[in-house]
Amino acid sequence: MTASLEKGINVLKEVIDAPIASFFASCVHCGLCAEACLFYTESGDPKYTPIHKLEPLRRVYEQEYTLLGRIKKRLNLSRPLTDEELGQWRELVYDSCTLCGRCSLVCPVGNDIVYMIRRLREGMAVAGHAPEGVIGATKRTVEIGSPMGVRWPAVAAQIKHIEADTGLEVPVDKEGAEYMILLSSMEIINFPEYLGAIAKIMKQAGKTWTLCSDAFEATNSGIQIGVSDIARVIVSRIVNGAERLKVKTVVSPECGHAYTALRWEGPNLIGRPYTFEVLHILEVLDQFRAQGLLKTEGFEETRLTFHDPCQIVRRGGVIEPQRNLLKMVAKDFVEMSDPGKYNWCCGGGGGVSANEDAEALRLIAFKRKKAQLEETGAKTLVTACANCRIVLEEGLEHYQMDMPVVGLTELIAEHLVKSDTAAKEAAAQGA
Amino acid sequence: MSISNDSEFKSALNRLTPVQQRMVAARFTENVLSLCEDPRVVAAVNAAKRPDISEAELSVVFQAAKTASVETYTQCGKEADWRNQAGHFVAKAALLCVTPPERAGNLAWSAAMNARMARTCETIANDQGTENREAEQQYRVLTELLNQ
Image (cartoon, rainbow over all chains, first blue to last red; front, top):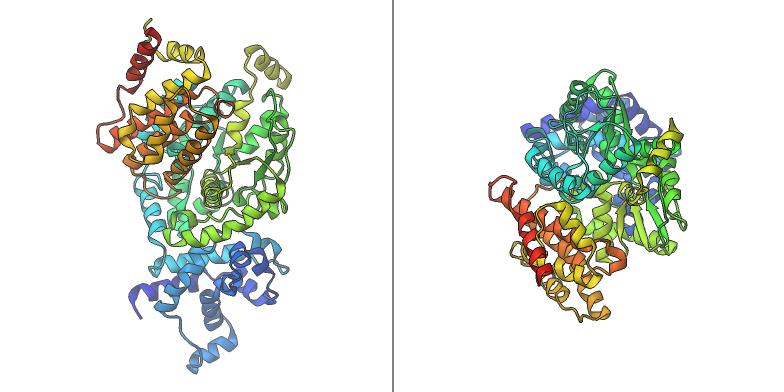
């Protein structure tokens, strides 16, 4: 047994906690999780059945923590996990799982399969079987602060462009601001218009906000690769920045896993409650709407549909805000089949889009989204996750579907009332 | 007439007709075209410079430029290659040049912004910081066009 394999198996032994033990003991082998996984439904290959992806972890559980398994192990009747097997499982654990959580949602006995996959990834990573792309992203996040290697000067350059474009200031390191806005590197690199939209919306809402120069990045590849120590470092950077600037609310950007990592897992990772609130940008916008601080004009002329990012909706619980916001700007909004918490993943979450090995399979899985979109007859696709946005654009391009994909925050910003008077009225109504 | 800041620049662009916007957007994009070798992007810029281009031709070059723009995204988690990223912003600028007016808004301004971002990516790639003179170049291009 190699040293890395031994370490990996030790990690697998350690990560099997009471919930995981009960999940394995409770599985009734019904196969419902297979029908919930787009990698299985679109490929038809039973190896993509979610519970099957956990087979290495199940074997360790059986051999180490069940009476029968321990007896079999002592009598050399069980097969020890090998490095080769873990290598073979990489495709199942990383390439064909976006951590979307649909399998966990449909499991009749309540097994959180995503939780188990993430814990399995911890052992896989230590055993040296995480994909290069995800390892690289994680290293860059720890060393540079961004999974894509984006440093502050590049952010500052984009800020300059945004300020020129909008004529509005993008505040940086403003102590005491109400909101600290986080970005994903994707927004800095590919969708700088998101930051422009934030500047316009905050201006209209009359709120103070800031970026933090040493904690601008929201994404957490520690979560994706499955290494809690790294996830903790990344969360701590944001917590330190927010506490240094004494902000009231930290706003997660249009990124799925960044939200769940920071809001739902962050306090557990750092071992204490936050001194600030964490909200997704859609929740903030919906609060502004409810307070009358978000005043829009005009409607989109074409039929729109909305792609629910899994981590925001299914894992994060943000379901109604985006629909409330869409009603403000769209007269012909149509839901996809299986909307909200049952929505199907774009196929690129959970580190899959950073993983070149997964590209062909991802495009096969996209057939589900293609079918969903075709059913709606929509002409424009709206979403609220930069990663989903690119995966959707690539999938649409691959299947030659001409459908613009837009971010919801930008769409709202495009419809903000232009006159100062109207904005003041909106603020007065909210006061 | 002379343009020396973004406020004057934007106002002047807003006064242009859609056809003029398309042609000036092509000039802005042409200025950074050396940062992108994709023939679909070059074709889009060349098409945008033609005042007599038909809607059918525009639709074909638009689709090709859109594909180039999507293909050049830096994917989530991948290390940013600033030279490639410059090419992406050039592709986006070229796409704007051939976008149907009803879908593009102030396309010349948007193309100008993307061209500036492309130039910034180039200077980052060359370890030359983020400062550059692209905005001033655009003021000069527009001033020359308006004074013709």
